[in-house]
Amino acid sequence: MELLLSLVPALIMIILVIITKKVIMSLSVGILIGSLIAHSFNVLESISYIGTTIWDIITDFSWHMPIVGFLLLLGIITTLLTITNSTKAFADFAVSKIKNKKAAQIVAWLLGIVIFIDDYFNALVIGEVSKPITDRYSISRAKLSYIIDSTSAPVVILLPISTWGAYIIGILTDVFKNENYTVTTGTGAYWQMIPMQFYAIVALIMVFIVIKFNINIGKMKTYEINAEKNNDISCSQSAENISHVKPVTNKGSKWALIITIISLIVLILGGMLYDANWDISKMLTVDITLPLFRGSVITTVIAIIFAVSTREVSFKHLLRAAKTGIGSMLPASIILITAWTLVEVIDKLNTGQYLADWIVKSQINPSLLIPIMFLIGGFIAFMTGTSWGTFGLLLPIAGKILAVSSPALMLPAMAAVLSGAILGDHCSPISDTTVLSATGAQAKLDAHFTSQLPYALISGLISFIAFITYGLTESLLISYVVIIVEFIIFIYIIKKISKPITN
Image (cartoon, rainbow, N blue to C red):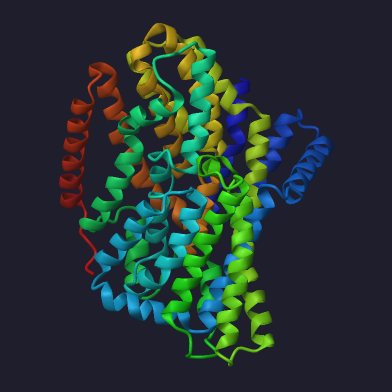
């Protein structure tokens, strides 16, 4: 009964998002219902808890608020580049090199693979660079946010030289120590698990196939058709606000945008190195939020210098740009704070722990445990909006169950947990990476969530069958042959039933 009650807030919120398309209202209802359940429907205690939780978030200057500050400053940077005409200059330059719509999407996909340090960093930087290019070729913001989201977590989880890699290696090391598992180290296990992370690999391939074969299904087809007509209904209000900002000078250059973005990247990486006391080996263990904020502060100053150097941007223009930029990111910031609040409420309901306890009690066959861990990992991440929380909860359980019963399947089961958590992240409207991918592309959150969902579920199905195959055969080769066959079948069916959009 406790498990069913703990699922109610997230389910109601997701249904409301789909029906009403009012994200903040839907999140707020989920928060209220969840808090009421957690406090036995005592209204005063529930409201007090919500207020305390929100206060704790907005006064947390070590994690939550630096991310919000980064978003607001990114809005200012974007507006400054717009009023100096630098964004248009960069778009003109990029379009001269990128000859068609397919190439524009491939560039965004490749950028997502190349920028692999952190998923937040990936989502926001790629969005900033790609928007001028994809806009020129009438690619919807929903499609861009899908490309961003599906090349952020899948990429960073496949590489140990990322913030995710450092976090997961830390968990694996503790699990092996607790279970007296001496076959490999946390780092060694991470490397061995990379080819077993089927969903991350499938999601990356899926993006390429979607671009290559111009596959637009579900809501994505609607958004792409409208974008072709220069009426992108997936575009967020913040993007519309910035699009109405008129340049005050034509002296901006592509180099202003390029140098600004490169400065942001270098400053953030430098900030991570600084927080690690200049020890490269410890660089990926630091929290990226403060480096994000500090880097964006200095980058804002650089963008101001570029604007003022044109000699046509006045102090009044700078103030107006700041107001517009902050206003453009305010809705996303409110959504993010509300989503964080709901995550805290769901955590108080112990949804993840109830599901984890169910796994332990079920005494499932080890070969079937691999696909089941994938599904449970996906469901927990979907309901709670946190892949990292799912890692911390399920990796020790996978280790505990399989270290004794079937050690050979221990790493595949852990890889299934990682894959499932990313799938859940991609499907969840309360995941911070979902919110930030929509923000980076300046797409409406509900548009991103609903248009990405079919692709994520198809990738999830392909991966689920691959995990079943691996559990039965313990062969990576056979599993990848199955994945290839599944992709061929998917392309064949989609080409038969779906008429492509003419570019």
